[in-house]
Length: 489
Image 1 (cartoon, rainbow, N blue to C red):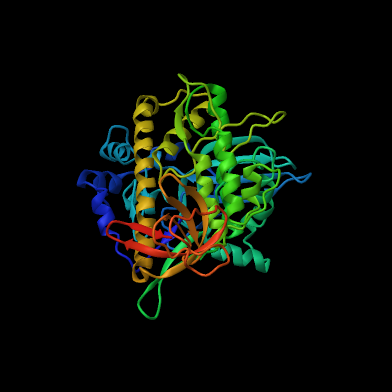
Image 2: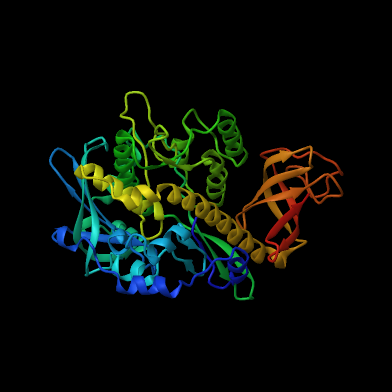
């Protein structure tokens, strides 16, 4: 979930987690002098019409896409991915620093980059109207949305334009999409409903933004998630599926895996969905989430609760371990070709993508995998695991801080809320407040402002709460320093 908060200061979080936006001088020097080490062997693909789609102001442009329609309702997807590996000398300072960092970490007001801007926002970035070295995927889809064949090669590409998601959505609605992505909505929908994808548990969060009101207070609002975001994401997942399946079949490489959720977790999710007012039906959680409107406060809340279904994702090195799938990307049903997933489409932001891509290039070309790749794999997995854990912790800290900052002026005020989960032993509950959209902990059981469902505030001390019912609750604490928000009944 993307969080925007231009009015707030996240320095305390940067300091607490020892995040360093600066790079050592030798790393900056490496980036400044780096050149494309594969320039002589690249295919010229500048004739292919490609465009980038990214958030406003983004300069680290990893991906450029173009789609053409073949005969018989088949599609061909061209997907250019930045090639930072071509600029990074094995054993050099830039190489070592990327192994230390693992991935870029995004805060609402700045980015702690994996690579220096000279590389990630210039030489290796797929900026518009500039020739750039890239990894070019060419993937063919059948009428049902299954990939039938693909090629991958190092190429020179030229992005025709840079768009934001808002610009592409407006163009789609007006019928004026750039020719390179005129088929993106159709292909995105086709992939979403394909046999390999339709039951996968995909979380498509809207963004949230902290805005300042005229009276100097803050409010937390939901920025609508646009369909073009999801269509574009499907192209990234498609390339990852091709890469993961190729490495799994060869028995070497790095997969991103996630086991199917436990039945108890699924049952709990359905209960929470019902508590939030959704009438569940005999579908998979993945299909339910795919049809959910996440742009409402309730929709965003159930998306956040669905994160419990995706616990346990990890990086898996093939060879010593058999391949495992990713339930958030792929559903390997009976009669459907088994597929696997790898991260290969964001190498400017994630270390593992650089290594997985190099392995796939070698497997497809039937050439030896470079020594620097095989020697580093164990360290790469460790770096990704540690940096992924750090990134998730920072994300939670930023959201908790924003929620506390927005609510701190309203301590003692009452809010309507829905009870999502009750822990009767500890006399606490998990509740969802509609405005601002917050999931928080609440204490109950003592003197209370809680009202019976449909009644005025003033329930007897010790009254039990009912999951799924709405109550009037009181904000008891909102501390931005400790990043704590708590209510009481």
